[in-house]
Image (cartoon, rainbow, N blue to C red; front, top):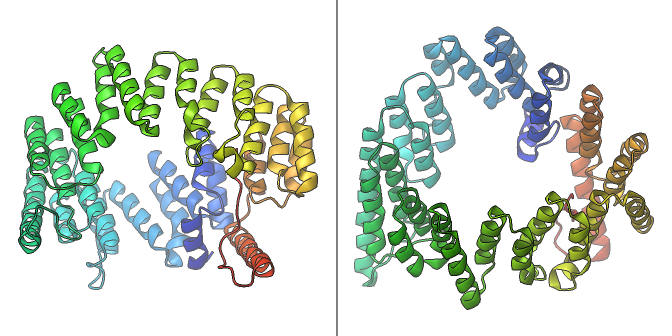
Length: 479
């Protein structure tokens, strides 16, 4: 192993992907992950296997598994090793090993990770001290609030966040004096600090104060991104303040209307929620409101009405998500044929602009409908026109048709970029996890294949248009 490959794996989910690692864990195959860590130098496998060993109190085995990764200088392995040592009761030694050096206190990511270990070692006050200088970054404010939950330090966290909010308030006031109107200073996200304050107040049993903080900010007239009124709406819903939520939805409909409708439904007022959503759709017809109404109808068991509610969006160029949801609803309801009819009836911008996705969905639905022979024929015909491009869809249909060995042979010979993943998943479904792991390329092999695809795409684009900007190869969505 080497650090460059490990960096590439972390950025690209190469080698054994996190999702596949979880699949092996769910199957109770942690021994396979240990082997992959030792023989393939796969960090995803090593990290997951070490956690499993720790859960079984096998700390020394976990440390030995991580040692080769720490030896090559992989920082993530050092953090994981320190966490194991803390669980062993060696907190001081662990923290000394990973304490940020003089060049790193300015690195928010390093300090956040170190603060996490401090909390695990029972030193929450020190963790707050480490993160506090970085609270100008919104994600570190969120990290502070997350890390200190149930640590008995809510009072101190509120004090720190209040100081940040007051500093930002002064910046806002200065900006407003400059421009003569009520507006936030450039780059100021005081609204986010207030949300964090409200989170801490609510979790510490001071929900009324949390509501008042956001209520006051809303009444200030300042402009906020949609995140702020949406969080305020959800807080009001959690506290059962439905009438106030209704008033907010009237002034911030994009952020709060769906939350208001769901709160009415949860309060046993589903007909009222449905009427409000239908009225808003009639007045504005936004896809977000249609999605909210679809959800309500699904929860009421009215699947056909939910599908019809979304129908007007299925031909929009950018509204494929509602279509996918509708198809899933019909399949889950045992009616894949109806889903296929819906898909085949599409003639608008989305279908025209996403032909490969339409074909992939059609093949999936043919399999769900038990029409595997028809799907196999269509996939084979597509493969004749575009050799190898439809191997994964064809293999899935062959498997559904009771021909797993043919499907596996096809995937083993395929050059499709998803073939390795599909092969491993199919072997797992066939009860062959060891073969599945062996079929997954190593990090180095995966990296080499990705770089080759990138070169080939660049060469192809150069041939097609020497002046075109080089980019990643276009890939079909896997269905």
